[in-house]
Amino acid sequence: MVFEYRAPDWAQYRMDYRRPFAQLESIENEIRVVDEALAVLVDANILPHKNYDPDQFLRFRQAVQQTFDIPWTAISPRVQRLLWAINAIAQPRTVLAAGIFCGFTFALNIGAAAGPGACYQANDLVGIEIKPAEAARAEQNIRQIDPEGKARVVAADAVDFLRTYPNEVSLLYLDADGTPEKGKGIYLEILEAGYNRIPSGGIVLAHNSVNARRRLEDYLAYVRDPVRFRASVNVILDPEGLEASIK
Picture 1 (tube, one colour):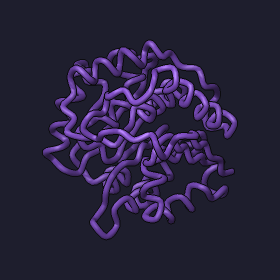
Picture 2: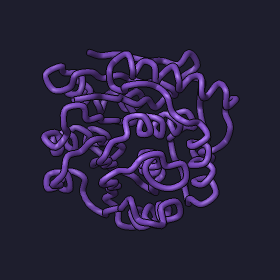
Picture 3: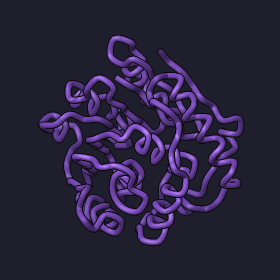
C-alpha cells in the first residue's frame, strides 16, 4: 500500500544548507509535525508505535552540533528528528547507510544505537561512502560521538558492498549519487543489490523522494510494488522528501 504524509507548510519550510541546526520553527512545532508523520508510518505498519524519547534525541543533536564538521547538508531539522526517531522506534539490528558524505546522515540513522542518547544495542552499523576523502571525514566525525567504535565507515561502492555483505540488513538508508546521467537513480541499483538480504519487516529509507522524483521514478515504482514491499510512505516534511518502505 502507498501512503503519504504532507506537512501543511512543507513547500515553505526551507533551510540554509550550511546551517543544519538553525531553528526554523519552535521545537514544539517540529515535534508535532514529526509526530504526525510517525503516526502515518504506524498506520502503514512500518513502525509498531510512534513513541521515542525527545530528550535522548536532544542529547544526540547537541553532541553532533558541537563536534561534527558538516560543510553542508540538505537534511532539515525535521528530517533529522524523523530519522533518529524511526531508528529509535524500529531498533534495527543492522543498519547500512549508502552515500553518507560527511557522516551526518549516517549519525542520524545510528544515533539511537551509538553515542549520546543511545537507547538500544545493534549488531552492525555501517556507513558507505564512495569518495575516500569524504569517507575519512565521516569516520572522523562519527568517532566524535562513537569513540567505542560501535559504528564503522567504509570507502566503497554501495552496490558492490551490498552484493557481498554477508548479513541481513534490517534498515537500509539511501542518499547516494550515481553518475551525472544517473544521479539519485542509483538508489534502485543499490536496493536491488541488497534486496535479498533485507528480511521481512526490514525498512528502507530514501531521501529526495520529492525533489528528485523524476530520477527516482523507477525506484519509487519498485518500492511501491506490493509484490516487493508491503507498504511505502512518502513523508513530505520539506521540499526534499523521504520515502519509507517496509518489506
